[in-house]
Length: 176
Image (cartoon, rainbow, N blue to C red; front, side, top):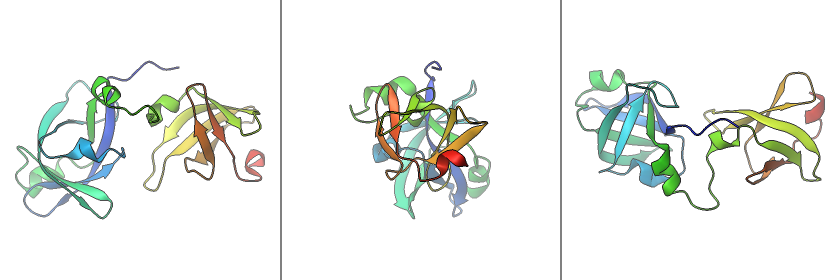
């Protein structure tokens, strides 16, 4: 299993909003409190964090069409906001880990876990988690050639445990 990351991506800046420097953030976490005014986020070119992290205080935050509109201290106009499009909002991993609920897990932590059917049949391992606009996809490496994608939705992913991910793939998925 890969080592623990230093940072955890909690959102991605997708576009500026208005002329006063607000940023539209696509959330990569279900924890709304990570975007609250008064908190601090770091902007990074990568989801893993990089060596040139810039901290920003969150001045204001509000939900808008399934996303968050954030005003960050020091980002005062649309031109500045545009320069951050594509950047990730990250938080230190240890901080995120300390506030994690017992039944919560981080998607990146699924990489390397065994994937089994509900009947206990081993399908392979999670090779990667692919983030998409609608929902994440598990990229599974098994005995078949190449890798297969499985949407990370309740219909297909039944249980996540420390040792394995239990799935119920759609009929015919193994033959694709």
